[in-house]
Length: 171
Image (cartoon, rainbow, N blue to C red; front, side):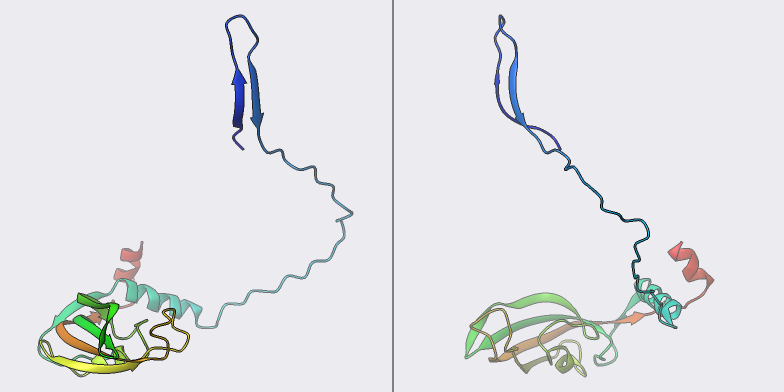
């Protein structure tokens, strides 16, 4: 490691004196290690590991198509405005404008994303959820909440076909 200089003395007519601290490697004494048996758990891939990885790559290289002629589906990404209330009071940090939410992979409060399904662009509506009892904010733990929602846009994820073209993109 780099030394930490604690002090130094220097004068034209004297010897340089430096006090530094640094770590030393410890002296290691090995016991008899030859012939030791070590059990190592054998790693096994799932049977469909290759297919799963190909699906992840197809998802990663997917495209988003703007949707204008239908209601939201559980696999869509939606751009929403929302504001939430508990006991009639606005939730601190519980509102956003133009927030993009993946309805199929949401980490919001349970039931939030599911209630955004089957709504149209421009539609304004309310949803009700309950904060989990293990929620990090004491004021919200286990409390019912109401959110005002507006759907601004809908996008549909189009997975890339698993083929040679995808292989070229992946490199």
